Length: 279
Image 1 (cartoon, rainbow, N blue to C red):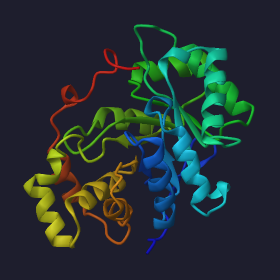
Image 2 (image 1 turned 180 degrees about the vertical axis):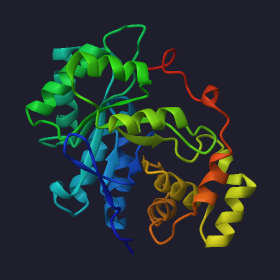
Image 3 (image 1 turned 90 degrees about the horizontal axis):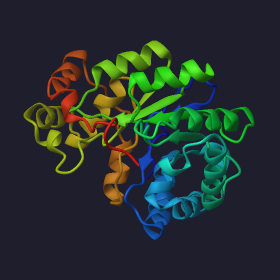
């Protein structure tokens, strides 16, 4: 049985994004086709993929099999580093749209800044062109630091709608979130449950709140993201978990409970360094 659709958040360039969606890494095309279609029936409307995930074809098939009109869905994909360039970004976008089988993408992100190659500003100009041509409804970045964002805004005057960054109770990214808020950028969390081992889910503060609210630890952590004003895309191919992950709109944490979970933060050093890593 589907839960109510997630509320939406208005983006700076005009689109509205659901507050929670489905991440699709590392699903294969065949897995994504099934999981995405089932997730639509469970109430999901936001779906997150990327060229690098290798499953855009399967995600697109799942979108078409889900039984709801395209305009009710919010589709995100991402630009890989080999296409960091003005024309190249537009060409890569069209290839992604073709694989997805869509006429437009709701949100297109630069996946990593790759500052060592120093081509992300030209890539951003390509995304701005896509936005102005109406081929995408929103544009953004992923794993960008404030200094990277300052550069693209200075060069184009266009603020990203979204920055998708690694963010969970062990890596709360408080400074980045404050910067985004000041710029009108929505923060979207990847690896929202903590990645491999999902260590935060076993923390006493999380398990205690799960018992208090009659929810799973994962639902408590996802609610923490929402109560911080974040957008998130938890990934799972397990039907029960897919349904549980969006069933988080019938309760809210108190400010004190949010702060207690945030106290699990291990600092910025625990995050992947996008000045060093990327693709």
